[in-house]
Image (cartoon, rainbow, N blue to C red; front, top):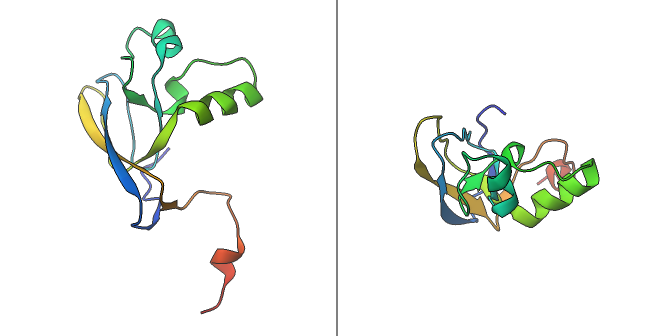
Length: 111
């Protein structure tokens, strides 16, 4: 995913999450908590660090993958982390973000 600023309102809370040096994160990526099953599938991931969903274990089918990501989701990356650097990045949660393909009456209101 290309770097995207997904912040609609700056009303979110921020957690600083460590990212492994082998993990590439772009601003706007969903960030999930790495659990033991993910580490056993990929020796490059560190337990309790953050990673985009593409680094997580395949749970078998689309519905199970969605449920797994939901269970491990922390929030949205507010800064990038390039390959080769171990970094603490800010991850926004509990706020108002813009997601593609999400339409609501909010965007169509006239003020």
